[in-house]
Image (tube, rainbow, N blue to C red):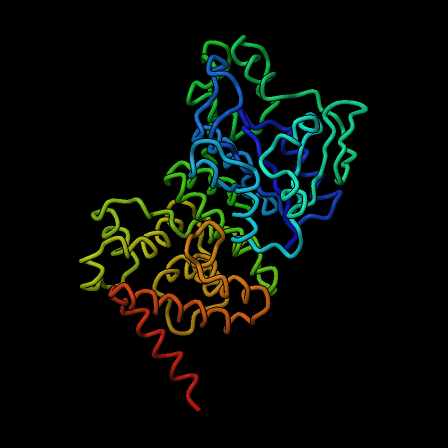
Length: 396
């Protein structure tokens, strides 16, 4: 996969950022742009900057349903000042792009680039992409020039318009607008205009369902769990595309697979009972294991999703089962190898690009079982049955 990286404070994210990412994707042939919010905003404290978490949440809320964009919060997790060279090396190691990643810079950074940490090494590791922000600017380093339109919008402009009560709402994506209004960021006051709106429509249509579900999952889950869910959805999309499966169904199942992860035990038991199955001793001991079963029930009852493949994929993404369908295997694999998950064997991510689905699924399953045994954790009944079925199938 050909990746490009767009970092910044995103304080707040606006359409100029997303248009720039879109132009890199369509104009330079990249497959995905990774948006990297910085931990520390470069603006002054009295500029009413949003917190790193607010800025990350605005980004995640701004790109639902677009598999070409993803969020990487490594700089927020590291805290403090993050150097581009460190972020670049980290992303290359985990994402393993097919070629040098692109590094998108505004040409307003040209005069400061030589002051960055290890600028020469950055130029060796990445293809620098210069986007115009000023007319007739010059960047004296090897780079790709992007012939983008210069949009008259900036994060500073948006913040100032919000604080003055001027028109700003259609300079930012709807998801970012909702967060700004609901969290009263940048001096926003409901007295300055309409309050945030939420959609309660339950009418389906695959993309409409994805957009609604993704936005609600983002609000339900902790930020790190939501990023995991979205990266699972993206990985599932990529795998489904490679294996000739329905990409939207894979994305939807990936977004929803951990929807019940934060529920209390009583609610997990209630939802799990609704699927008609029994609850094992291990599940009674560790109710969190029920989140997959509960999730399948919840998306069926609350969101009207009755597709058996999607429900099975959510239901069995932790335990697996004998004779799993292709979509269920894809979600099982995607959950275990998505790029924000730490400690994944690089070999699994590597073979995910070449191996057939059954080979890939077995490799991921074997790796998961080996990890559980190494940590001396119990293996669920469903997983034991799945292993037995696969061993039987592989006997000569």
